[in-house]
Amino acid sequence: MQLRIHSKNIELTHAIRQHIRARVTAALDQHATRVRQVAVTVSDINGPRGGIDQLCNVVVSLRGGKTLRHSRKGDDLYANVSLVADKVKRRVGREIGKLRQARR
Image (cartoon, rainbow, N blue to C red; front, side):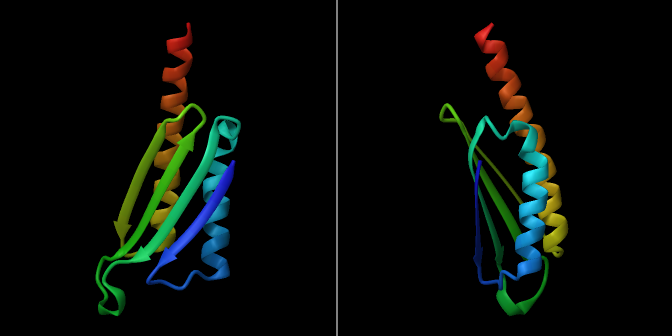
């Protein structure tokens, strides 16, 4: 599983990068053989104006060509990353289950 982390309009500190890596890896570890690539993009939509503007977008490419996307916007980037990782874990598990059912 290849993990790419990008940022837009926000400083990507070592702590944020480590949090993203830990949460996404933990969420998708059991499906690592089925996941080809994960791209995580964090951004600050409004810039310095403030407000609910921290966005976390995750794109998961599964082996076999299926691509899953999920994003979350809120005021806490760490919470957004955690919530998106949990959601992606459930969606990837569901998609892999569908693929298994189709083969039977």
